[in-house]
Amino acid sequence: MRYLQTEREVKTMAEEEQSTEMISFGIIASAGQARSLAFEALKKAKEHDFEAAKALLEQSKEAALEAHHVQTQLLSKEALGDHTVVDVMLVHAQDHLMTSMLAQELVEEIVNVYRELDATRAE
Image (cartoon, rainbow, N blue to C red):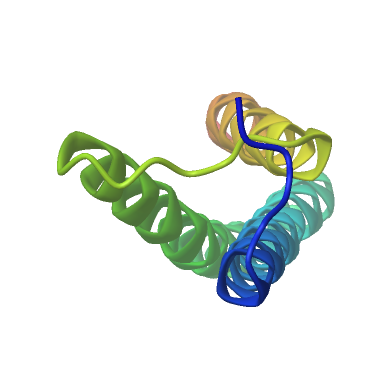
């Protein structure tokens, strides 16, 4: 069993950790933006501004797509045998992405309910 690491091994490990950290922050930032935009869309729907709600939901989907692309890159790397160290920050980032995606789906449904209610009241 080998305990000592060469300077190169230490440097490579540090670079991988920094890379994983930056990937995690990127996912968190994009997913957070997606979630915030989704809830802004919900607020606009409550105000009966369905065009703004639709535009905000589209922006939300674009932000989530950025995070999803990063996630896909990680999965592709893994499939090619290039293992990514999974740390608490990356798990946290994945959690942010999944909750923002769920928020988007739910907000979109609620916006549709508001739109239908608005149309029913107009009749």
